[in-house]
Length: 108
Image 1 (cartoon, one colour):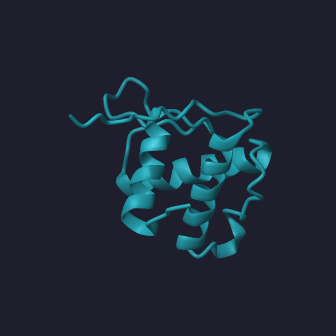
Image 2 (cartoon, rainbow, N blue to C red; image 1 turned 90 degrees about the vertical axis):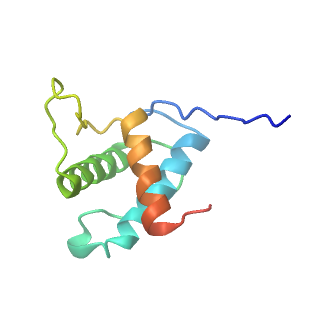
């Protein structure tokens, strides 16, 4: 019998610290590099495990870009709602994973 392990990614916000934040920062850096960082809109982050203002700004930028590309609603009453709040919850983790899988093949 095979057992599947499911790792739950935590909700991250400004002030969070740890390995999950490092993972987030790597994904955001991969995203920034993939879009060629035009005009330094998405600065490359230090992978330090600290969710500070630069990481929050990068999350907000990613959320905004992802939402615009997929034309997702930002109204919480809409069933397809996508937040633009700088907080990394289930929907943002899923979006980052989707981006990594389809565009970057991030393995680190």
